[in-house]
Image (cartoon, rainbow, N blue to C red):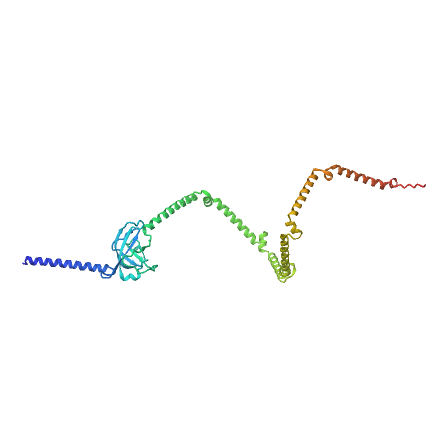
Amino acid sequence: MPSQKQLHWSELRVGLTVVIASITLTVLVFLMSSTSGMFTPKITLKSYFDNAGGLRLGAPVRLEGVDIGNVLKIQIVENKPLTPVEVTMRVSKKFDYALRKDSVTMLDQVGFLGESYVDISSAQAKGPTAQDGDVLGTNSRPDIQDVVRSSQSTLQNMQTLLQRLDRIVTTVESGQGSVGKLINDPTLYNRLNSTIAEMQTLVTQVAQGKGSMGKLFTDDALYEKANATVDKLSSMVDDINQGKGTAGKLVKDPALYDNANKTMAEARQLIEQVNAGKGALGKFARDEEFAKKLDDVVTKLALISDRLEAGEGSAGKLLKDPSLYNNADQMLVESRELVKAIRQDPKKYLSIKLHIF
């Protein structure tokens, strides 16, 4: 039978074996789960986010999708109201050549509902290499909650739109409104059917050469006249291109351009002379004294015209007094009667008397 001392020693060996195995298992698990290994040099980096987004301690830290470390600490700090969540990361120093001071971090998820992790991007980074204790900037990426919140308003608008469409469809099905009557009223179908029948009759008549339209489509005389007209137009165009006729000379003869250019030059010279006050037109346009005289003459003519209209003076009476017309008319009548009497009995009025002394 074993002694008490041997039993204690056996229990101690079992306990030591369990402790050593636990320590060995813990080290192996750590070495297997750690990205960079236990004895690899590490640096500590920090970033500040507005929300942790389900991030936990020990979550992976990835550089362009490659694991380089783990999340060491997550806490809320003061004096950062917009980004109060401080995330401390421990990453392997062997990746420091790809980590820059202006690299940016963002929170992402594995799959649609997977765990959150920190992703570092150096695609646009051009600064110096990141050192221990540096703070990296953040770049927000919308998570599933942001997507759901932003889609709620869209879903509400879609629901409102569907309700309106449902009311419109109900109104149309009940035959209300223009569209409803258009779809449900059989009168439209009857009219459309009648119109199609009339169109068919019209097409048949046209195909048979009846009426103006039928002759237009089936009579060869129209084609021949059109062809002759096109030939005449072609001949006219050829004559114009050859400079024949008035139109041809108008197009081809450079004398027209020269005359027009000369006329424009003379007109410009005339306008310059008028603007300079030269000649009769220039004085007429620029001389203020002449303008005053012309204004006086027009005023006097207007005054004379008013007096003539009022019947004042000899000329006014000549225009307005009807007695002149009556006297003149009476004198003409009497003159005609005198001439007539002379023709009938000239001896009465043309007698010659001789007196001898």
